[in-house]
Image 1 (cartoon, helix red, strand yellow):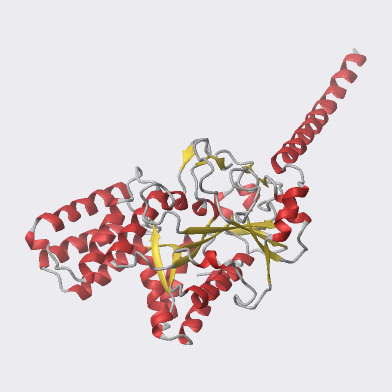
Image 2 (cartoon, helix red, strand yellow; image 1 turned 90 degrees about the vertical axis):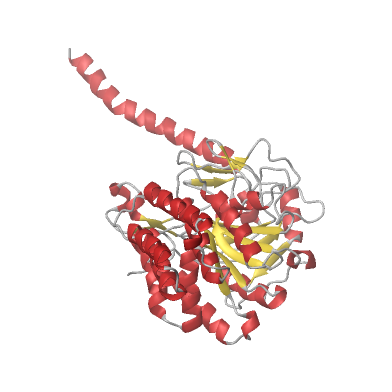
Amino acid sequence: MKKIVKRFLLALVLIPVTLLGVGTVAYLLYGLLALGGESLPHQAYLRKHLIAVRPGEAGSSLAFEPAFYRNQLFLLGEAHGFAAPQELDYQLLKHLNEKAGVTHYLAEVDYSQAHFLNEYLRTGNESLLRYVFGTWVRANAQWGNGQFYEKIKKIRTLNQSLPAARRIRFFGVDRIQEAAVTGRYLRELRSTAGWHESLAAGVDSLAGLTAAADPDLPGLSAAAGALLKRLAADSVYQTGTDSHRFSLTHTLRNLVYLAPATPRDSVMYLNLKTLSRALSLEHEKMYGLWGFFHTLQIPMQRDRRVMPFAAHLQSSGSPFRGKVVSLNAYVLDGENMMPGKRVPAAIGKGKPYFNTTWANGDGPLVFVYGIRDLRAITRPHSVTIFNLVAKNSPYPGSPRLSRVKVLIPGQSLSPAPDAGTGIPAYQYVVLIRNTQALTPLRE
């Protein structure tokens, strides 16, 4: 009997230890396969096609080949939460303003948010800036950070030194992020447009629906659609052809897009086409910082086939096809600011945000295939841009640096089977080493 008890107790100890050991080995093997090995031919290519970015010089260290500047849309992709991309974003924006005449900042914000940010840039009224950022802080979004806030203040300072024709403006094409911001914008339109009483009442009613603590988005979408139809069909609701009419119809259309059936990246593409055509900006150069996924230019595979914003831009029939360049940033040895409310309480510990090293490109949560080549030829505390599409590049059509494994269901990415090799996932990769995390912003 004693032998049986001893064997049972030994099993209780050994089984968890064995399972832990097997799990550790399995994880290490997974990481090795997901990262891939180093490739000397790839490293030789990368060494010939790099730009070392010097910090704090606002773009003076950037020098791309002439073909780069002939693009129309310039997109910088990042994993949200790292601090260094905010500084690089400002450097690229200033550089492209000087070198390519870029004045439209194509940001990951919606039309109404862009309006209030532009009003801040125009007037210096910082309460408008705090208002927009307050919505991100309350939503526990990574956009609600101090570096982004200070960057917009730097853009205003830059604008004050530029002639009017070269001043930078926000261009918002994202799906509506916060209904209350759109409601405030509608009320502002209503107060300045001088609309017919019936139309003003319809707008007031719609703005009231956005003010709820938890708005009924499908109901809001349906109400906006009904008002949009009345606006088009009933002469009482006609508003002329001025900018107020366009702003109203465009805002209503975006409220309609709140219906769950409209994918976010499709909305971005539709909005960009609509705004470019309506404002005669079809040939205007634009630049912006986006989440990494949105800047990928080919169909991608998650748990299903998905189309990022930039893939829509490069799709057949797009007026922007062949005019888009993406620079996608990966981080090694950095800290990331994560939203605490979106993870289990045991991880977030009840804090709005917490810092972690999980989001680095070489694990322990994210694994970028081929990133070891970038580490091998860069130094700590550096920012380096690599051209992946120069002559004789081994990257187009390859999964290296475009396949990302993430230990969260539904978050891994790889080129979709029908992606082909005609358009790369992106043209430049940026390696950032040893960045700090973003700093949370308080309301």
